[in-house]
Image (tube, rainbow, N blue to C red):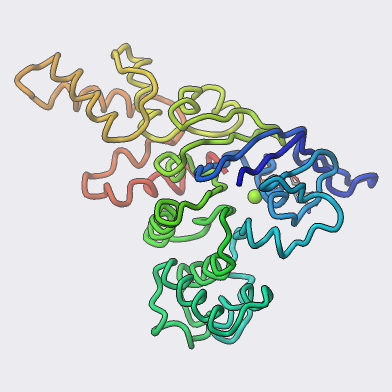
Length: 335
Ligand SMILES: Nc1ncnc2c1ncn2[C@@H]1O[C@H](COP(=O)(O)OP(=O)(O)O)[C@@H](O)[C@H]1O
Ligand SMILES: [Mg+2]
């Protein structure tokens, strides 16, 4: 069920003095089973783009074809689109409204005219998929739960429609490091175990670097780049020009190359970056002494540049907190 986006343009409030073209002439095909990371600075058009994929917004120009159906045509049932493409809004927990978790998750399937048994089965399935214990939460008010749990319930409500494609708009926004990691693990599992297509909007490179199979980079309403993370992260300077960083590993490699170290291009995952550094240092000091590594890293960390590496200076067991170690400062830099 590919999603074809063809010459998509959206202008808000057309014809008024406040008219604003949020996305311009976007053409892109998303294939079954992809995990797309949509990246871009705030205001670059990410939300506008993804809200077209389930018919929530109508294009000013262009069209969106889902599984062969032009969903932007008049008369297409939104309910049918939403059975195929589920959209989780940013801060979806604000949309919870039923008295109990089970009722909230059941809302979508109920509108689909399923039997009581089918609805119940889907609700149990969706709640399990988001890592919550049905027996413990089903009868609770969603408003008694923690922020992270409320977000899971909201995601379960979309999953209960059994969409083939799941879109998540900034799913980790506002969560603490633990909640954030839990949501990312959950999304990774949903993609891997249900052969779902996932489209995740984020402005956090480190979140997306290890999850996405392909990145879509937006800048000022235009599609600037698309490719595997490895391809995209090679363009560090172009990314910086549109207000984005690269993951910590890629930034570290960039700095080491700038210092004259022969670190190969295209690395961005921390384990592979560490391997490359150790290989180089091993050549400098075959005994395996750690001084050359320490000296190299100290020099690279002292270089002026984006805040992308702040988390990298953390002690080893902050490894856990590491994607988030970059967060407050780096986030501000990128948001
Ligand atoms: N409802 C709206 N009415 C008018 N302008 C909007 C509306 N929503 C978004 N915009 C404008 O469209 C542009 C893109 O916004 P958005 O798609 O929300 O970007 P992102 O999700 O990347 O932050 C921004 O300039 C924003 O101000
Ligand atoms: Mg947005």
